[in-house]
Length: 205
Ligand SMILES: [Fe+2]
Image (cartoon, rainbow, N blue to C red; front, side, top):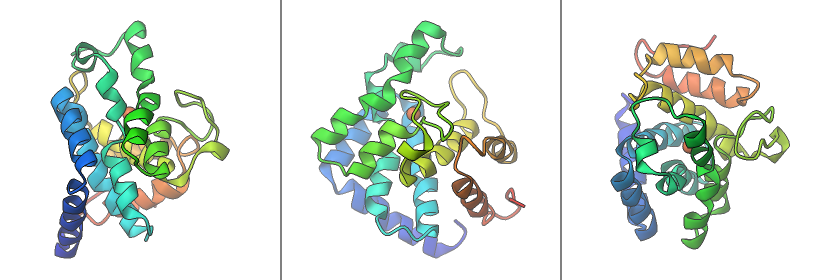
């Protein structure tokens, strides 16, 4: 991020995404519905795009739109639940858990790529079947969703939420590294290395 070429590359990527009317409209819809989720989604988009770029993935544009809109299903969740200042109770948690599945329809209707759709559907699944909504196993999970899962957790932990204070980057990385197993170790390692480009950032040994 301190390398000006990263800024330039990222700025071009963001502009090209925003030229697509459906991407723009869905992201604005999310921002109007839930400010926290739109900030989180933008954060995930920045970090995930840089990680995919670092890994030299060829299809950055479609990965980037999947990153930006991975939580679009949250527009079907009540704002009262999303903006609560306490952790959700069980009856609120059930509709929240459906948001990955609910992301399918708006993305499919607007002809987003299969990658972008699977990223929305699978970003809370875990390799050991402990995720939601489908308790999918590793063999069902594509690489873009595996990468997104790592970045998604980091962003969720390092942003202030209505009911939870942000953790430091160092602490968040520590927690993510403890989740290797449910999370793909290749992307945990690559993400730690990406954060290492920040001066005095956390390192992965
Ligand atoms: Fe989510």
